Length: 208
Image (cartoon, rainbow, N blue to C red; front, side, top):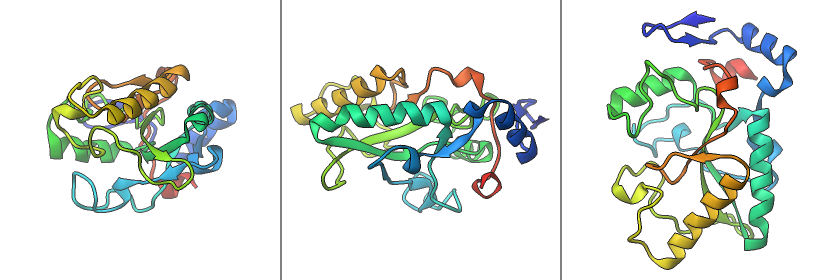
């Protein structure tokens, strides 16, 4: 365990992380694409198509703690009767990227401050949307991912009926598996077990 300038405890050693996993398999970060059949990945932070305008991840990977991945797989099953499936925009996020985001945005409503860290850093938050299950094409939702406007709020009412339905479907399916939505962002969900997991600042290369 090491500390940053904000005196926030962080796991920065892959050896310490692996020791935690050996003691408790739920601590493991797993590949969501391998755990959730039919999952679509649209990992914006591995591309220039994000708020920073440049890739923030060297590799396009969606990782989450094992219980989070298991819950997401159950959401995928629940969406199937509606012809819908999940798309993941972001999952585990190394702490240093959270610092970069806050420096860019500077608004706690849309970016976790570095003195607190993000539940993404714990491997317990997911940014997700919906796709048409047969084709993988995006289903209409209130805004684009990471569009920081009033319409991104999970209760914003002034939307077409089909968009309201899609948003309600996503919120309900995620809530049924225990995920908690962050109201300012229709796409952001936290797993309820997040307090059990430490903040991590481990790169994707270190983890695998």
